[in-house]
Length: 435
Ligand code: SDX
Image 1: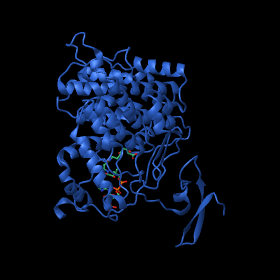
Image 2: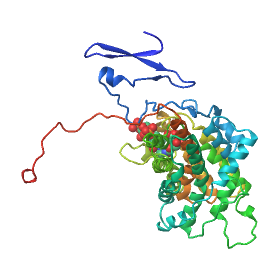
Image 3: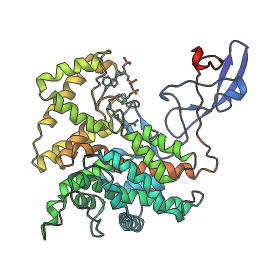
Image 4: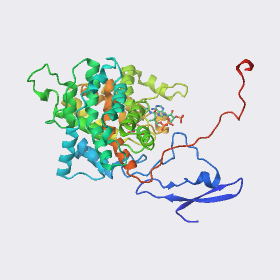
């Protein structure tokens, strides 16, 4: 029996089988049990996939106990300090930081593909003004494949590359269009003279009726810097629910636009990317610091479905490193944009109270990436119902990177989990007059 294996014994029959222990670059070793069903006739059961590695990946590494997050080996705090969202997107997609010319070409291609097909504008007319922007984004992104018939051969690496670039390029344009539709403003086109985040802020807030107004009014450098940072911090996060959704959809050979739309749908849930919107609603409901104990008690009550939004994480049992960076940025942004936001003060008070509460200490519940991000989005005048849309723009970099990684694997197979069946034994049909 070697150190590089694990023995599984069926005590009922005495049968023993060794399974290889796969060792990655960092993190937990992984037992390869792919032949378990054939060898011993067993499935494994792991509700919520707490102990299950669904794939091999070289993109992102998380150490939840030590609050470590690496994109292609580079610590998130270094990327947050020195990089830009498009440079991080290049890193995630290609595995290395770009050289200057590579970044220039990448940025130019993204800018070139930022436009939407003109007939997509009428697509938005089908939504009521008060449709949730995530509902619009899911529909519009899913429809993109209708415009690119000639480049959907997923066996062609160039078709895969251009599809990934189109998605990354068009998400801000689609996001801004969702917002403009909700407020009844005309859509603005992306501009070739603006960088990614500047373009987004311009498409969101600039008004064609305001001639010659100083563009800086809409693309404040403080706001653009903060937005770049938030997009970097949300760009990828290993096999989270929405990324796993993209991988599972992609394993069937579905087109990338449909797969990313599936990821957007999964991200929308309040347990996942929808938490940033839910945090602001929760803070508004709490209202004042004197009501914090009441809500902490609700969060602790096993019979109360209320959870403290923005707290807890499947992997981080220590501080989410992204939350730490965002928390600091809140101070900078609110000070520079002179947006004193009482909700920030309330969030700080809530964090302080929760971190001293034995329930949160015992269950290792810390603020996650969603706890403070909404405070900054709000300071940038981004509406609350657009917060998860912002998360989707950023996570598109991670989603397309995982999609490219998976589609490049010659041995990738359709994902098809099994189950523990707990339904009725076989029984006969009963005619309706005898039921
Ligand atoms: C994201 O996976 C990722 O990487 C996600 C993400 C990414 O970048 O992709 O990091 C982004 O989704 C961040 C998480 C945003 N969601 C929230 O902030 C919603 C609030 N948090 C919880 O719903 C919860 O903490 C989860 C969903 C984040 C994690 O759920 P788990 O891992 O399944 O944990 P759990 O539900 O098993 O909780 C363990 C215990 C439970 O109590 P017991 O059953 O053991 O008695 O902790 C309790 C939970 O009730 N608990 C909470 C809580 N979170 C967990 N109690 C109160 N408030 C909370 N927020």
